[in-house]
Image 1: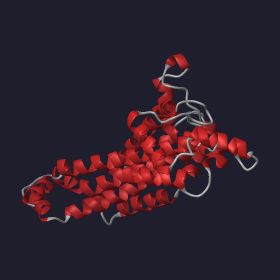
Image 2: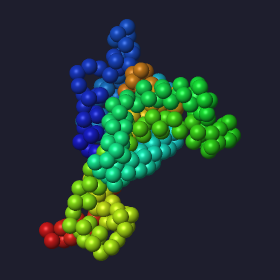
Image 3: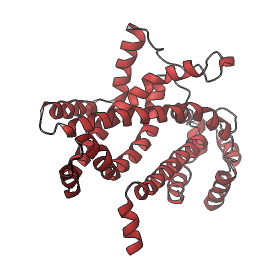
Length: 307
């Protein structure tokens, strides 16, 4: 996270070019550029500005948005209530689809079912999620009218929404995000399960008379989870970054749309803090995945004690 903060700060605040000039545009007068530079603290040394930013991140004082004239922490908090449920819903759909297809293909290795799943997953990998999102809108919103084409009604009934309406508004965006990631993860699940199926302990379990279902769920799946979890951690990060595009396609007021609007408005303070938040989320998720390795595979604990 410290390394990420240095990169983000260097790119947005230290590299040649005045951020105040970027925000105000080419037609800005020197006096207005100087005034905004002083307001943003750009006239101070870079190390001082970096130290103040780090202090603000720790205390939650992220400063005010130039475009909205609103505390950045408040803006981020308002958008997280859309982005986090969307990412979680997409991850649940990804996991359900990937494990169902991956296990189905592995159980039918080399047969029609396996070839079919791998062919469909290859198509899914090739689909751009924003194009698939447009297809979903055309089919389920325009033609069938099962879902809204965009917008978010809110989680509170007082705002005209409610939990049911809010979840309904997130279904199509979650599907658009999940399809590509599910296609990738299904191939990883299939490969990992096939590798474990060739192990000696699986043959031993079969020789003892265990059913194929018992062998799969009791022995194979748990041992195959380490490489699968690695990919899932990376995919959650991809889902968070994918919301930047999908939230704009569906006009969702989430964190991705906030970043997009901040870039258009040249609101570099918002961009810097949101990018750092996303980087921190990725670091925390991957740390949690590393901890789960030891929980799922006891052999890792044994190796750690012996070394």
